[in-house]
Length: 148
Image (cartoon, rainbow, N blue to C red; front, side):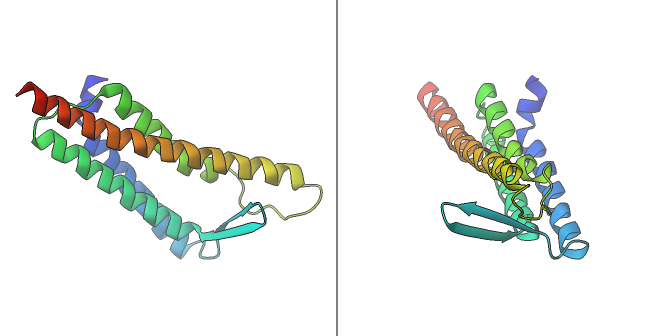
């Protein structure tokens, strides 16, 4: 468990590269795949390829942040890293594991509401995870500066 915390940057870089590979797959194989959200009479339509591109880039940038801390020999908090990793990975999994090609009929209304709630909950966890990421970097750096 401790070795994964020390290689936090590699974990995020590998996940980022996998997400960008998914972006290429969705661009070439499924160019019409979209994520369609309806939140209180507001429709949000995002191409899945673009979403994977943004998420992959974000994962790589998080890896750069952890890598800079490793270069400066600043030890991160393990529990914050694990929560950040889990909450960040849950967001792409929340829409990747659901069927995005459900026809909006009255019979499917409850299922569509459930899927949109799952996506929204995943988004909330993603935002909380990113807050933990910045908090982990900030507190770890302050702890290192204070110990000097």
